[in-house]
Image 1 (cartoon, rainbow, N blue to C red):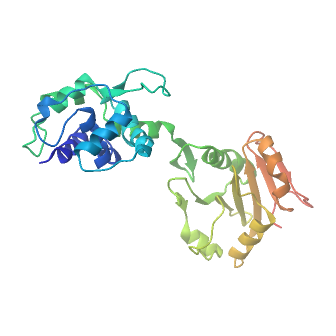
Image 2: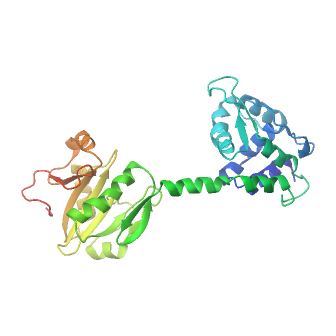
Image 3: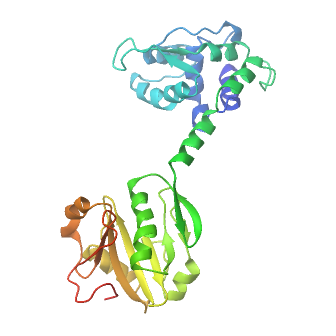
Length: 309
């Protein structure tokens, strides 16, 4: 097994994410270990190297040609993750210093030195076993961070989690603060997430109400249905784009032309300041809800209060 493939198996066994098992990442480790194609792993070293030195070593020893402008790619795809996983360390210089350098940690250097080129697995590498006992795998670290950052939300009496971000923070507020106050007893028929577009999508109910679901139609961020009044709430969670503008209201009306239920158009904002920024883009005869002041609604040119038009 050649050195490049062997380092990839090592990165996999140590728990690096798939993206950090690439050729570029494996070659970066070989450069930091000063390992050429010929020779064993026991000769590995951990001298301080700049990214420029890493690129030069790879180009001179592994028949590839990374340009100098690859430095940022190597930093983002390899160096950053390797440092988080304790495979490498830096020399503590300011990041803009020409003497900012990296090297393998002593622990990971031992792992590489004990690696055997002749075998397909690393089960007999005692240094690797010790490293794994003392360090959380990067896959688990990243997974834990994602789990911590997720926002729990209760939808239709079931527990879900939204990905982090201001848009989903607003969607959570709509479902947990707006709906109980202004759409009591309503059912969420649709809501998406930045990583799971159709997190909740009750297609059977939508079709029974008269929705003609087309892959070309962009549904509002949230759709609620209040059965006791036969009202459908079309809600846009306004973060940076997409309020209930006149054009958007027309689009939704066309999309839902077969629906007989009453239609309510709502734009939700996180703050009054954000509402003021986009107020001129809002359509008349629509509603505004602001998470900062959840007990109140703004009715644009309303001859009546909350209700279909």
